[in-house]
Image (tube, rainbow, N blue to C red):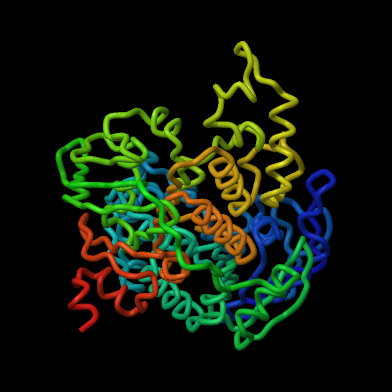
Length: 504
């Protein structure tokens, strides 16, 4: 099916999110839509999917103008969408999520779950997915949840499939699997719109590339274009794709973790007897496939883990046993891996989110009353300093693009007096220009003499930032290696090989 967008314009008040955009996706083509966070990519696709109504312009399928009043009309026309933030109900099973909105019934209106299960198995078998139709979605890893989203779209016979930042929460291995799925769909004739900001992925899988900046199409590019050329088109300026940093100047003290064990409420060991230290002026990157204890390690450091054994000392002060509030007050800055769930309150304003962990600070609160002017001034300064694309401090944080939400979290945590900075997946779902900015801020924090821990599943990010790399596998550290360790060695260690075995 051929998809054509003609002159699509969408405004939100004075903000022009899409400005007369023209786009053509041919049948059996993977067409990458590349751009910064807030460039208008997702807005354009939400117009296509019927979630928004365009102020101007037309949507055509096989040269026929369409009028979508909502997602149901788009789905009936053969358009499916895999959203960046999954549209799944955690307490429903896979089969129940797939049939939601298109429920098959048998006698007396009873849901035909058996038919839904069969359909899930048919689509899963077609792509080699290992998915239990009766599994609760909330219990599934994010990579498997995304497969459920794909099954949902394909179960409606989608002939145009939109992937909105599909790899934002995937491991490198899951990303490779998704690329293979996209190629298989393309070869079967499905038209694919691939929204991303990851240059490596675009060059690997796209047949055509359109670049959007500030709501406008600014160019077309070939998949053979260099990363530098694509980044410049996206941002409108030259972008440093490598992290510039001097050799670390280490101080005394810092973080010392000794014999740390983290257990689930049921007693399962998820971090198993690990020890390491991070000196002031050093970045320790924690690498590993998602689900090998990195999340629980971070939760233990910031006081979120339920059962912790061992010791975590910061400049000689024991953190184990302290509340989250006490740990933050001790000077720990924390960027969680899921900004939407753990980093922001979406209904709060940008300004309110920027002072979430400073609500008792006399700079912003006096005699139990918020000093609105002080908060507004602080927020405007951070918005400018961190280039947060928003209509103003009072805009809801949940209305921002994913990358700009991440900038709000980074700005909040880096604006305090820190003795330790912990960042989990700091650039997940963030465009190349913002990645450059965040990496520079992390290096500046390290150069200010603050110990830094970066947890990332992106090996490019790990090797770019790290002075040392701790590789985790099944809750243990299999080795701590220099930051310039080759990717292939790190990859073997992430699969459980020791440092010696991986280097052999």
